Length: 429
Image 1: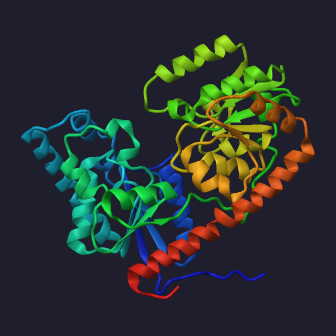
Image 2: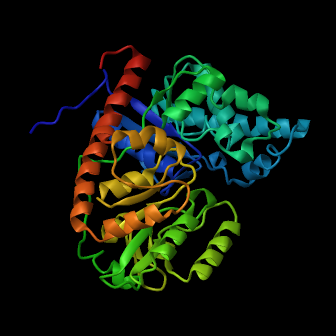
Image 3: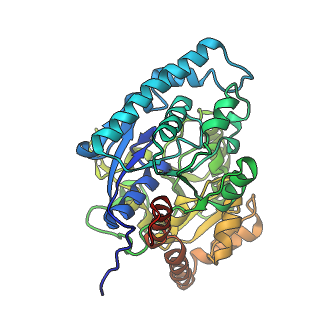
């Protein structure tokens, strides 16, 4: 069968700019997916960030662009949870902004960038000088831009009180000619229009549903044994970082109420950057529940390898094939990458009905066990039924994969990105 490549005019040199384009955070993962889609359309992608793991020959490393750079993190602490800022702070913002503008200009000139994709830096003010620098460069050059917004300031409590409201209104995001604004869910689209009068298009997070998922192989076949599980144990996977908004206490409660020695909760990721209080609370809940929980973050990495102690390191995609059930009890998500991953691997999901799921995902017809903000008797009984019925799990897997292929595949991103480029350059799709 032949493959139709969707292109928009001449191939373009497209530059992704962010604070960090490294690791497995959501912004980095989605940027890489966009790049694969765009390169499949004949374009060439380049990268600028404060942390990078892209090919050196296509990268511009600018350490000052990272939100954890000492100058930046020290400045950011003085910008929020306050109502004003000093003149010295303003001068520091401007100084860092000017240096970052120099870095952006160097990146654009070095690679002859024709289209810029700011990844979240014009949405969430994790790095105020970088957002200002990007906005001014766009204004000065009238650059064609596809601004990819994942999180906005109004979606995070820590940005509610600010001494930089003037900057937030100017650059997060900016209302400038030549910008195609892209959000990841319809709630953001509505809020962006209501708050700032900025029109946008929704391009949801995607996965390569056109390619079947990897399964068990000679490397990952022993994962259960390596983490101390038997073949007949129920591996209940929580595939997220340990942060409060992930609602992992609900997964703990679910396993407690299953009251089955086969049920083991496996948490694949480490704690996030929001302090240790939530992890401490979670350990208390686990102790009180008396359940079997395995934290395996030290055995899960971006690539396969070995730990310093000589133990195997697996990827998250090595863990999914072993799961019997995936828990996704988040209180809030911008979209839900882990949900798509569970569907990709054909796993049943217990999913909290967070706002974006309820509005953008649930109406599409996914078969899931819905968690109505708490672990009810009905939820527990549904989980028991699903875990005990292999035929039902197969039916759900087939149905869910078909829905995801239709709405969240690379083909969807390809069509929508082609339209954005067509708008910028006045070309037909």
